[in-house]
Image (cartoon, rainbow, N blue to C red; front, side, top):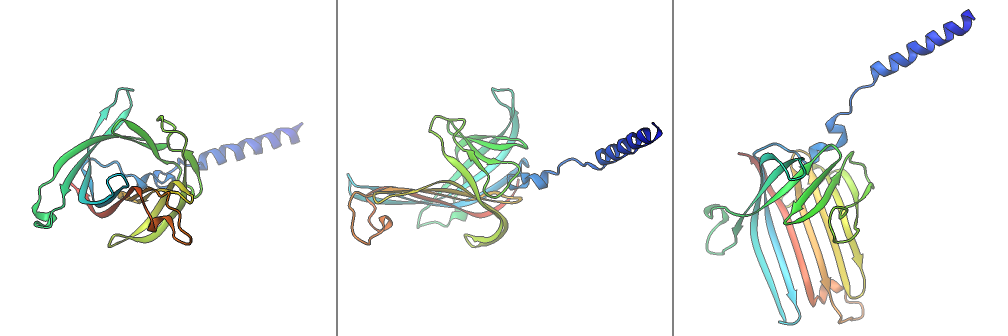
Length: 238
């Protein structure tokens, strides 16, 4: 009997000791620093967009700069904490440098940021951009909160050092949102995020071509669609 009581006492001590050693999960270990929520933080991007139209037989290239700024915290219509993401624009003109052009407000987006996910409402469409903890190859439905249809997002890589635009950034991850290629179409949607900055690169390639030519990739015979690239320049706080 004494032996059994002694064994139970030792087991209780071990369990209590284990519980005491258990520490809360760090936000950094979850990867929350891939999308900082600091009020006043802004990121500036170069945007290059090319639109192909077979009906008008035109190819239109558009360049501009975008500034995304987290301006305030508020409670949304679902009684959840949300971030106001203001987006400003500078339209390109060959007659003036960007530095001499003032920012003008373009639109306002909303972000719901928790220790589980980052959801961004772009216009009236909600996308699940990131999930936590950040783990390579993790998958989730980026369109679970909208009516577009299921797209399996995944972390293609994490914690990588790479050059975005002209800047070397450490701890970059890539979210593969959609990648589908056929003889007549190509869709490639990706986003990249860097720790302490947030979004640093976005690419949307959505093109089609019914003019199939031997050994000629679709990228060299585009008839319709868009190629959009949003590339990090700098970030700061206001």
